Length: 344
Image (cartoon, rainbow, N blue to C red; front, top):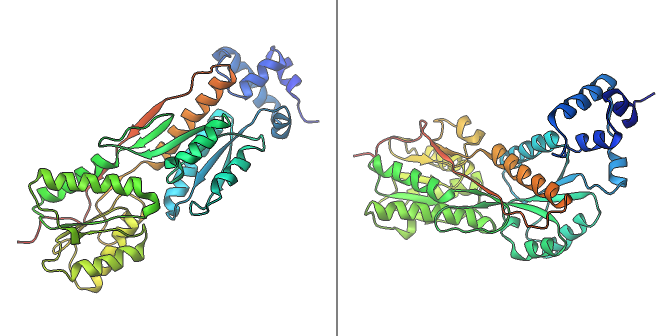
């Protein structure tokens, strides 16, 4: 027969309510009691009944809400949230959502109304939607937002900020210090405009601080994918004068830029330096390997899940004060082979 929670309680010498609190990772149980309970669970090979926990009304799922074409980004985010959920005794619900669907707020309202979802981790563009945030707040649904930060950005409520502004500033300053004067900027999707916008602001600020003119024809919006990077780079290389460096808003764009340069027989980095963003596998699988900014997506996601779960537990213990915890991550420059001093 399978062991029951009462069997665990008897072996550990505690009440079954204490076992339940330990399984649910409630912080009110002392370390010694926790150790005894977990030892008994392991000895008896006890498996908590998830469906029973749900029937008792304790929502146990964290929902990851996203609409992002970058599979590497999504996988790393999932990994970070899942590891924190496992550590804290929660389950992960992965819920891709179409941000262009005019009814997506109703879709997410329905998701949180089933009683199993304890909170949501929101990534752009959902983390930037005031309508969605108001809808969640009106239902008392816990959530944490992953947002682009830096510059003069201010955010209220539980969030994890990614300092795109200063990371982009550092990238552009690095290219300037290599002697580049004509530096192009390849942006991303308009629906993910916050991160692309902050990176553009950092790029422009670095140009201004270096006393370099802004060339509007070197700033091209587009999509966060390989084809968009290739197509836009082909246009840039037809300019006179053509840029000697390209700052791409992610590594897929940068890989596309590298491909277009090769087709045009433009040597990278000798004639054209290329920098990406995020430090995805694209940055290490190209030749030459891409200079980029390392964005620790798994750590960012784990931090978001941790803030969310702490807020959920606080609310369950009767704390009516809204959670306002926040953390900030700054992507750091990683120099590889796709950049060098500007050609003379």
